[in-house]
Amino acid sequence: MHVLYGSPGATVNRQLIAFEPTLIAHDSLVTTDMALAATMFAGVYALYRYCRRPTVARLLVTGVAAGLCLASKHTGVVILPILLILLVTEVLLEAAPEGAARPRARPWRLLAATLAYLAAVGLAVAVLWCTYGFNRYALPGADQKLLSIHALFDSKPPAAKSAQRLVELIDDANILPEAYTFGLAGVIKASHRPMYLLGTVYPSGRWFYFPVAFVIKSSLALLLLLPLALKPTRSGRKTPPSTCRGPWTERRRRHPPRAARARVSCRLFSVCAR
Image 1 (cartoon, rainbow, N blue to C red):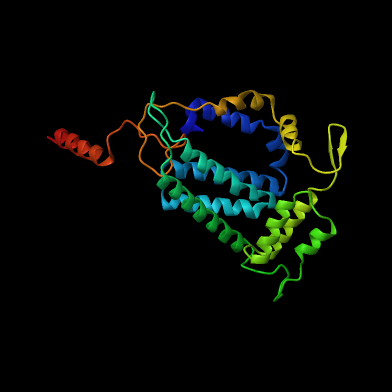
Image 2 (cartoon, one colour; image 1 turned 180 degrees about the horizontal axis):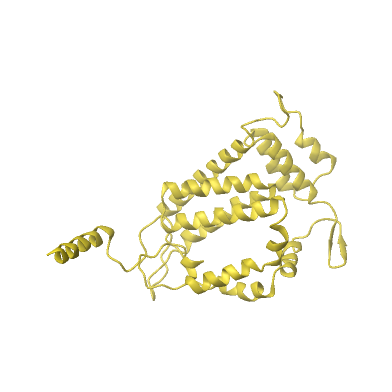
């Protein structure tokens, strides 16, 4: 926040976090909710840092943070499409000089962003395997699959057929640990259970549940200030060449390069020594 909006914005952000009812209610509980919130924020922030200045180290941090988000809770799988959308948006909304037309995204930038995303996802999957001790099967000492995801879905088919087929494909290909895919299948199946909201009982989950819950649980100050976060920041600094030159891209400070500053400092020191 300090990088984007300066000290005033960072101060307001700290106050919002300190008095946010949802965070106050969950930060003292030993549940996966705070772990999911922390690791998802870490993954998005790591991607932001990578887009500012693409380096291998920052890409590794992005992949590790995404992997920890996957391991913290099954619903953390949404971080993968979130990172993809943010990265593609960053490339497509390439920064342009003021008054000039926005340039088209160059194919090599799209290719570089795609490769970076695939590398981050691969590292995230490796981190997930690491948290499961690289155990392929769910039960200790098992040498074959003893849990059937197909039987789990056949007993009560979920509403999201596409998600069901995707999980079955991942399980058949042994891309992820069996325990993780079985838990993910359980989450998808649970989406078919009844839902209660605002005095009404629905036979299954509805898309508007979480938006309504977010509005009810969030503080009034956050809801009033949230639209300001969509306002792009302006800066007169130049944009360095990078893979993702969009709204997140780092602005160069109006300072001479480090080597030039060192030469100036040496000259000043020599003058003072005389």
